[in-house]
Length: 301
Image (cartoon, rainbow, N blue to C red; front, side, top):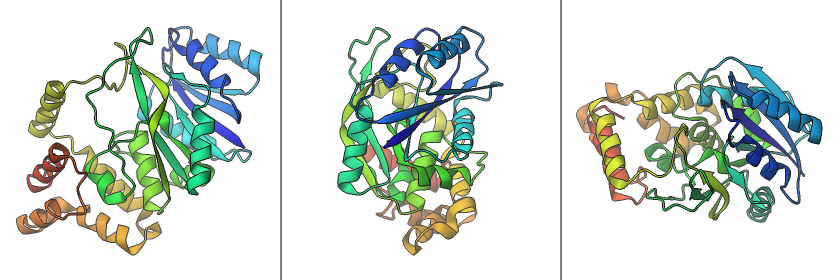
C-alpha cells in the first residue's frame, strides 16, 4: 500500500524538520513525498535537499510564490503524472504526525470501503503544548451539507488515487481552499467518506499560520460579520466551479442540489428563500445554518 504525500512549503525552516521526521516515521505504509516549494527565501530548500539525500523518497519542485491554495492545486497536477501509488495525503509544513496517522486512515477506509478520509486533530502551540479549540468538528458526508459549511482540514485528508485524477481534470480559479475543493470533488463523484473523530496529528498554531484553529467564538463572530459586510462570496464561486467541471459526473440528486446554488443571485427572492430553507442545506449547527440562510437570501453566499 503506497501513499503519495503532497507537501507545500514556504519559509518553513523553523518547524519543517520536525514535520519531515514525523512523516518518515509513519508505520505500516510505504510512502513517497512530493514537495512544491512556494518560493521560500529561508533555508527550507536546503532542509528538503538534506532529507532527500537521507531518505531518497522525496521529490522536490521549486517555483514562484502563488499562495498555499494554488500551490496545493499545482501538487495535484504533479501527482497526476505518477502511477505508482494507491492513496494520496495532504501535508502542511509545520505539524507533527503521530506514527499511526496514515495506517489508521487506510485501515478505516478499507473497513468502510470508502475513497476519502478526514479526521479531527489536536491543536498545539508552537512548542507542541495542547490547546483548547473553539471550532466545531461537524461530520459531513453529502454535497448539500458541504455547501453550507466546510469541516475538512487539509492536513488530515487521505484519498484514493482516483480522486486525485478527477481533481486534476479541473483548473478552478475561485475556490475557498484546496481541502474544501477536493472534498467537494469527491462528493460530486458520489464517493464514500470515512470520518475519524480521533486525531492523529498535532496541528501547530503559531504566528505564521495561513489558517489556524484557535479562533474564539467572539473572534469567529467578528470575522463572519466582516465577511457579511464585505462579502467575498467564495462559497458560491467554488460551487460554480464545481458545476462547471463536474455537473455531468454527478448523480441526479447532486445535480439537483448544485443547480439550486448555480446562479442563485439571478433567482427571485422567493426562489432564494426556498434554497435557504431547503432542509437538505443544514449542518445541525444553528449558527452555521443561520449564516447560510442569511447569505443566500441577501446574495452574500
